[in-house]
Length: 99
View 1 (cartoon, rainbow, N blue to C red):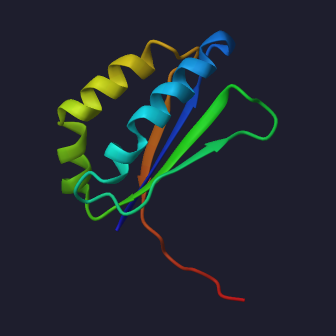
View 2: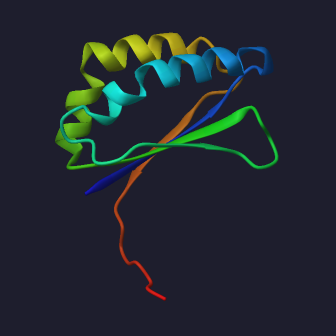
View 3: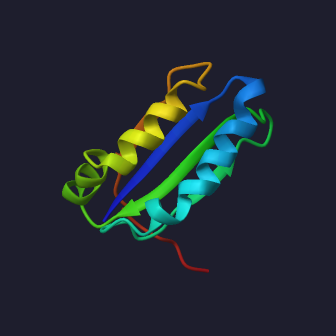
């Protein structure tokens, strides 16, 4: 399992555009083969910063998504809204601590 986190900082006047586009496409992204989950987070202190959290079956499945028309369309729209360069990274869960 690969966990993908993408941190995006938007121009304040473009946050609503991002959210509208995310809500339009979220089900298609979540249902893309290999995507196990999708969450959108907002920074507690800076309301222009959002993160996506998505576990993927494998790096190969993530790359298939990144090569898809869906990703190209969503990302082309989204990157025009940024005020800073996005930060993306992939990780794997090492340990989960139970109660």
